[in-house]
Image (cartoon, rainbow over all chains, first blue to last red; front, side, top):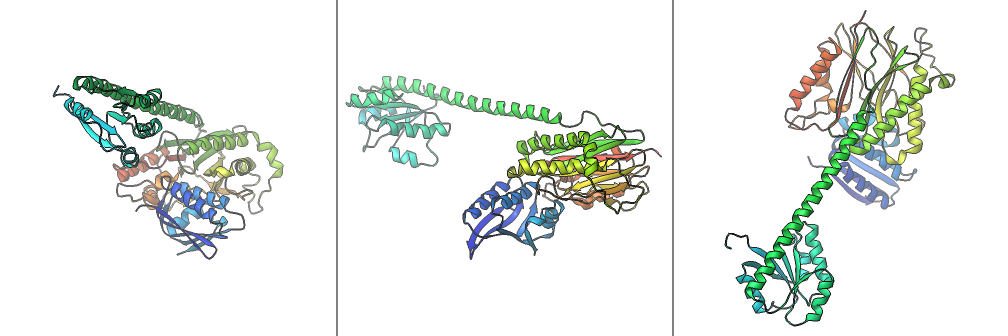
Length: 103
Length: 407
């Protein structure tokens, strides 16, 4: 499945909808979406991961980047996380920097 | 001259038509002629492939250069020729900007000779440009190859193996350089053995540079910072008398914390981190103290068979969160047991249909019992090769088997 990262914004939140597999070859698209989301100046960043089927370490790195790029008081919520993706995020111990909600 | 390939000519003209006698001479000289305005060519996608760009002197030289540059950028590299019927002053500007020129009378024989030399020049220019690109690529590949060799120097030259133990490793980068690494080194006057398997996030040269940094930080701190750190480490109360004091535990904790501290202080904005399994083994007793920093849980395969146990994370990946808490895990290897440590290149290996090898398949192989470490790695390798088939290896694969052979 082809990877897509789609940005939308409204009511103070920027939402990045991820679909497909987030790995080294697709992470640059996610990086770009994060930059664009930061540029909106929204106080809340939502990463909709309900259609994200796989995350490689390059994807985790993109999440770390997102955490660094937004201001500290901006909440990053990862929503709709599927079990395989959550497992990878948890194993690396990166679940603390984000508000995670499973599907 | 019929066997010769036709010279393709693009006449660049803002006017309605190029001079009749020029057009006739071009055609009689065997050229394939097209006429476009500069605006057409600049907007065309893709730009037409031609040998000669024949521009009316009335088109300003900078516009002609812009058109030529656009063709050059796509590797077409036509020879630029300016023509005029009577405005010889305008021709001068073109000659100054590097174009060749064509003037009346437009006789077929003269035009043919000029086109011939222009085409040769275009072909030569194209060949040179391709050779230049290939040379760049070769230089780049050579540099990368040097990077690979240097990176291999960051892996241990040999695996120090205490009596009664066997250590086997498989290391297969997916690309020329890798983010995975492993290390085996002696600690505490050879009374302990440090074992590391780690995976720097992401791929390519960036991951490889951080591999070199993280490996060096870990090993240097472990080899040289142990004594100093003994005072600062509080051993958790839950450890029983058999494991306290754990020689090497302070060294381990100090190495991982110092590495995490260094990375989060100096490199946090580059976003690189590593998942790692770092264990300190007492070869005499078989007891193992470890930190698993966000890494795929190593599997302890018992000689007696049965469900293998996993050594789950005791802290997050190293280099992400400042002042992370890492706790110590404990395990014990009895004679015949094998500890299998690996990176996610094993579980995330993919079949041609994109399916993952996965933990279950790996555990199935491991459940068949230990044997020697080399046997075990061979079996995993066989299962992986069969599963992956013709698919391309997508991630670095590192595996280490630590086998307690003696009684």
